Length: 314
Image 1: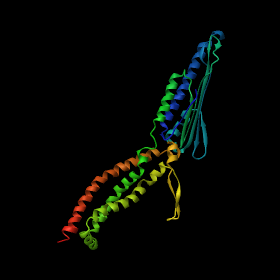
Image 2: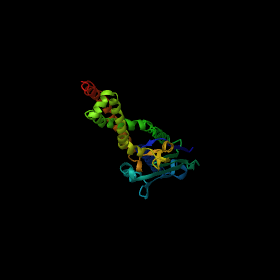
Image 3: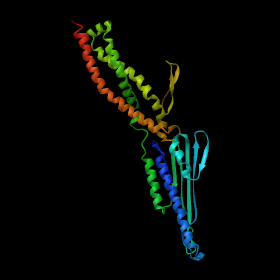
Image 4: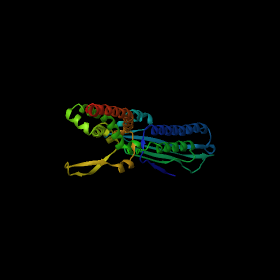
């Protein structure tokens, strides 16, 4: 029975694909070896006494790589293209693999009339993954390997994870962590300006508000600058409308397309995994600054209060 698996909302690496293709080639080699062994066993026997479990074997697998430069190359073994898959994934636009194995059986010179057929078609590109397969149930080991492969692909990380769901919060968190440093310095330095010092003497509550306001303003700028390009590699955009104030069109995240497609780590998406790790590492690293910064705000606020209100009033 022919089955098909089409991936949705997954980030798919090439490692499990390569591992399965290695198993497919082992399966083909085993089928051919059985035929060769049975040929030796039967070559001395009259036709009416010959018995085969694998006769008239047809075992064929092809690999077609479409490259980003427009070239298309066909290979007849994994060893011929494995180096490209592992070390030059960014050069691959599409991978298509077709395998077909069929053979008949014979008992005492009489064929069973059954055709043992095993076949699959695997197609992967930067935005899609499809696997159609029909594995003969008697090939129990390869059936198990195929089911394991489909399960591995289905268990690949979802694209709509925390990094995407909390995009705005992460950008703001990183920006705030960076922006609070100049905000603390600038605000504290401003208390030595006579006019500001005099103003804070009467309205000191403005000081801590100003620290966080300036930190927020810097955060919007620094957050977008730090992570904007990274997120643009992960999430496609679409036309969002026309801004009459700026007299220009703008784009917004296209989450429908994002969730419908998969990210196969090849071509322009070969480094998507590294991009996600960069965002995670940046959030973790900058996030560690926030508590010390809040402590710094409290300390500088206390010092500023003493300078502008206590000492300033004497």
